[in-house]
Each structure stands twice: as C-alpha cells, then as structure tokens.
Length: 230
Image 1: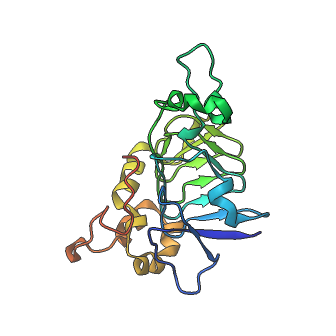
Image 2: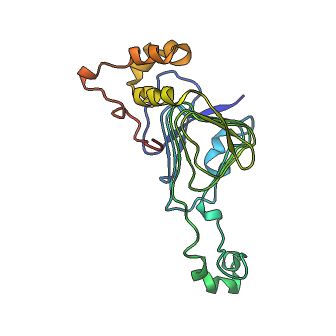
C-alpha cells in the first residue's frame, strides 16, 4: 500500500535509506514531527490538500513524532465554521458576486485554536475525522470512522461519533511513567538501539533503557518541540 512519511517544510531529519519515502508538507501552518507517516492506496502525497480541510489560518495543525495516520483521516480546521449568532448560518459573502460586499460578516467566526496531535504513535484508523481545536494526547488510538470533537487523554482508545473513550491502554500510574520517560524525545540513535524494548518491553524495561540524564538528556529535551497534552 502506498505510504509517505510526512516531512514538515520547517525541517525534519530522516533516517538514511528509511522507508517510506518522505513527502514534504509545504504549508507553514502545518508542523509534522519526524517519522510520522500517512498511508493511502490512492495518492498519499495529496495529504496537505485532501486531508487538511478549510485551513486558512492563523491556527495550526501540529502532529507529533512517530504517528501513524490511516487512509482517509481528515483534519477539519476552523475555516469550516459558520456564524451562528444571526438568523441564518449561510455564508453569503463566500459565494462572491454582489454578496462579496458583505465580506466583513465572515470575520469573528468561532475559532477553537490549534489542532494538536501528540507523539508515540498516535494511531488513526481509516476514515477518522478530527474537528477544529482538538488536542490528542501522546500514545492515543483513534478507532476507524471516529469523529473526534473533544480532547483525547494520553494513551486513551476512542471510537464512535462523537468519539468517546473506550478504555485506556495502561493504568493511570503507568501512563504517568510513560509520559515521564518520553521515549519519542530520545536521540534517534538511542531509539534505534532500543526498538525491541520500545515495541515489546515492559515499562520498567523502557525506564531502564532511557538515556543517561547525567549526560544532559532530560524528557522534553529531544527534537520534538510538541508539548500537546500533559
């Protein structure tokens, strides 16, 4: 299945010889962390235009490192909003012609701010929709067909329309430990050396594998600039 690794126009390192191939996202309003990828059998390279909708700014779409985006994921941005404070929600000026004289009526639309997705393989199933201003925590899973209208806690599994928490992947105390170890912020070479632990080890194993803090590493000090949900 065709897959692209999304690479932010703001810059992102890539592993030599890594697959899938990188595809640059050019909008300065979209930030994508390293190694995040989008999977689509038709045209994964069209992510920026087909999967990010009504994005006119100033709000941003921010996606963390090591995220997996399934086919058909959609991020609906604030530009999709209509005025709701008058008798009609119809956006007359947007259709042009003489109605464009009333363009000032399109200002002050509801704005929920940036849409932010955490790190640690936030995994989106097929045909998921994320509404404006949502913040999705590290390690979350969004089930196929879900419509996410509210914030998702770290390591939660959500599904449905509107999406609800089905369960969490770990106990609260273990989630706190995972957030503290923040493996996604480790140096790339350290992650590479501990892939087996990251994928199949225990949380204690992961803590034991963390970089030596005596050498200056601290959680949050790695290449990810994203702090979406604590």
